[in-house]
Image (cartoon, rainbow, N blue to C red; front, side, top):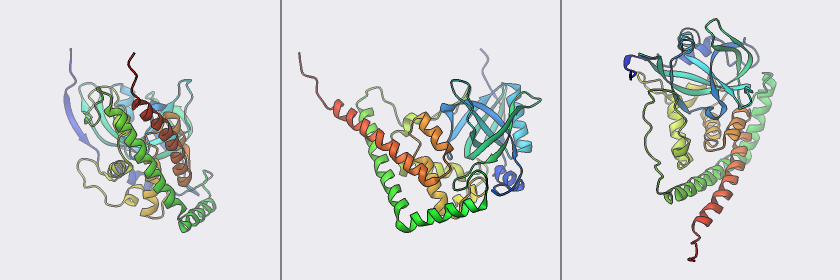
Length: 320
């Protein structure tokens, strides 16, 4: 049996996506031509939210060409072509940056990270037989017609919520409920003699890595948020990370300051442990406050269900 052996390791230049997005004059919401983006097909249950990562090993010539074109033309960015069981394709795609890749005897290994979202306008097949699309970046707080007025209205609404402390209070409640859910998951997992959370993931050498949703069920938001922030601020293995989130997302999100960037990252991270359909919904929401509220509602549902399971697990079965 032949084993895949390392031929060469290739580190992507630091922050290639920023230069590409800046040169394309996105994220000007009121103007700008669609971007061209190569697409990798994934089932919808593998969709990433901003700050999440995935490793892949690609060995088809068309996908190796996709990586080559992404590095040469698209700032090392690709999109996820998300398809459901019935062959339906989501209009909103996670925008991924290739942070590192290496050529191997069979194909190429790559580390991908989600840095934003894009809307698919028109999908076609390239001459190399991989999917490509015209896309526009998809933001929170801007109607997807891209009018500046809608951004101003959204800012005014957000400022109103901040003034009343409503959004801050909502975040505190999300933290509390999320912590409760994580704690009950840990208690239930502890009762399972076969549980093995906390084991580090090994580098994937063949096939696609699945998101480590299992271990993240036991993590609090205070543990997850620094991880997501570190992923987005990373410049790859050969560069120092950025210190400010706004430096990393200025061209893929629309945020006025660091607090707004933190809040948007919080809204996505709060959705980490939700179901596939719920994560899919969160990906398509274009309002940060709405996403936080949505996460809170879904977490409360989990909290009620897990509380019942914990109670049942504590009930001793009477001897016959």
